Image (tube, rainbow, N blue to C red; front, side):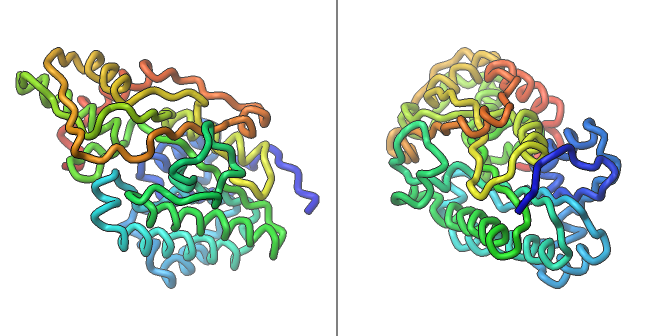
Length: 320
């Protein structure tokens, strides 16, 4: 192809799809901080990415030179298990519409964001990029995972057929400002923050968490993820998706203990082992990312403390 990654033009129109979500808002903040002065974003009320005609019309009008596809329908184990059709159909449509429109309008640089759930449930640890499609997926979120795998294949297909330097990044579990703290749709870390903080405020004598607490999870602060995205756009070009994480993991029980300490909850903790644990361990091999010259900067305890502070500051305006 002859493409060599380099510093992006800060004055070029850059479209962040999903710029109000957890990841998209962090990417927007980081790009703005980094000097990008032609950022474009549309809320879901302004542009329904499931509406193909609307997406093509937007691309014709905005003419972005760079696209970061961070828009997705996301949720925790309960949401994924209950609404698999929604997670498959909506994510496929979002991805197809945005990437097809970007292709038609000649967008050279596109970054597609997936999820570490694309890898087999029992993949060897840490998980290398090459383990994609080598085993059975975790059944509690396989519909979402299949949609994200389709996105990776679409990026690879565009590279092969049209020789455009599009890339994919697969983040580990993300958290931070802008997270979903709702009772039904939140992931494990924001769910723990809300549960423990409510228990502290209510004076509850005990808190009950799902599962055994034994699964190991890796967490990356979303501001680090945003920095990694810009780094990859400016330093990486290849057909293989790139894992983005810290390379370190903790048990859910250890995470819960950090959350309890940061919110000031001192009551009893119980574990409901009748609820699913999900994948026993999910740690990404981040060799590719590190060899490209990037490492995270925000430690887990520091990141959780700042997220608790953000949650308390924005509590009245959060989704319930």
